[in-house]
Length: 227
Figure 1 (spheres, rainbow, N blue to C red):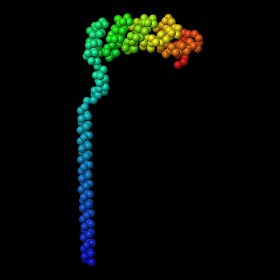
Figure 2 (cartoon, one colour; figure 1 turned 180 degrees about the vertical axis):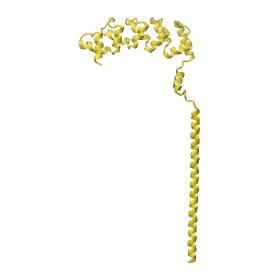
Figure 3 (cartoon, rainbow, N blue to C red; figure 1 turned 45 degrees about the vertical axis):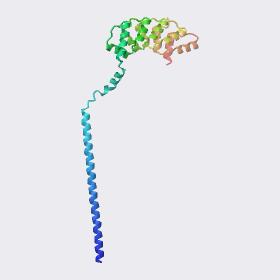
Figure 4 (cartoon, rainbow, N blue to C red; figure 1 turned 120 degrees about the vertical axis):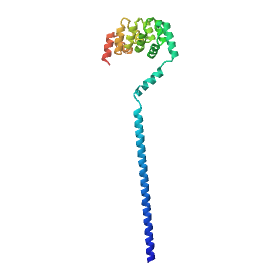
């Protein structure tokens, strides 16, 4: 009996020792994990502080201008192109232009070829500012030439005025094909019709329906009433 009791006692002691050992190991693992977590937290806090410090030292004031600077660099004409432009413009009587003037002309879309065409048509006194205005108003040498062929001897100012109003040589010619005279198709009437978007197709349809040409006033009123 005593032997069995001693064996049982020894078994209980071994079980107790194993339990204590496991508890101690768990405590060590827990302490180890807690230590790692603390290290991670400290590392994260250090990185966040470093990023905040570096970010506060960077100057972002010019970042909004970056796209404009890139576009300007891309569109900047070469020196060779500027020299050729200056030479050709000087040959047409514009004198020696500064680099800034040449860059402004180039950016506005002014070209020696188009300028020479305008001179050939008869607009030899057109100024640099008017050349830029022509580009803004979308006046081409072809428009000026075709309007002249149709009998319209428009001034530089009138060319810009009519194009800004939407007048085209094609529309003017088509209206003449329908029987309208130059006396009816005055500059003012062309601008009136363009302003309310009277088309040559509208005029042709009304002529077919009525059997006669409506007046310019009737065309304008019809378009306003049938928008």
